[in-house]
Image 1 (cartoon, rainbow, N blue to C red):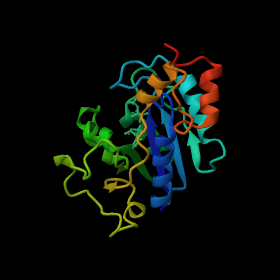
Image 2 (image 1 turned 135 degrees about the horizontal axis):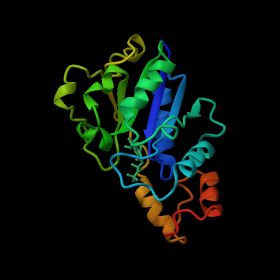
Image 3 (image 1 turned 90 degrees about the horizontal axis):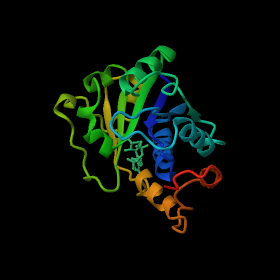
Length: 213
Ligand code: ATP
């Protein structure tokens, strides 16, 4: 079965840690595409000072030239908070025959029980969690997820055999970059961020005077 990666985030701004995560999942799970879905109004963060349109434009610039990476603006077209469960329902309607795979860093997985209708997420997708530099080395599963864990090294084809319902952990650590640190460095224009943000994104930020205060 085709596997489609679903990558939601605030992308405020998108950075090389996001891109490394997406490449790892694309290659490890043999996804046909990764759909980058910027949140319009992230429920768990203060409203970003940079507009959703600007954040989406930066995603588009960052993924240009990557044939398997797609920008999906479905959350920008919806009213109110951007709940992942609603996005997944929409994706499931769009791709009824694919295995959908929601990807996230370990920090997001740890906070999952605070997400709106989080117990329903696996009704629509699989979950793949990637190690994040500051997190524990092993993934601690939430009790509700016991029995759904798949070790990719032992069962590499498990995700392709079902539409949804499984969790895996990729113990691969993308570079230690966060949007929070990027925003702080961009406020002090002399700090180097060149190796951590794609150059076309940095150029867009500078041209549009983003993250200056
Ligand atoms: P912020 O610092 O503003 O909280 P962020 O860098 O975590 O932002 P988001 O857009 O909120 O970026 O992240 C989207 C998803 O990507 C989350 O699941 C997050 O865990 C994951 N992610 C982001 N950066 C990394 C990284 N460097 N390593 C692993 N996962 C990451």
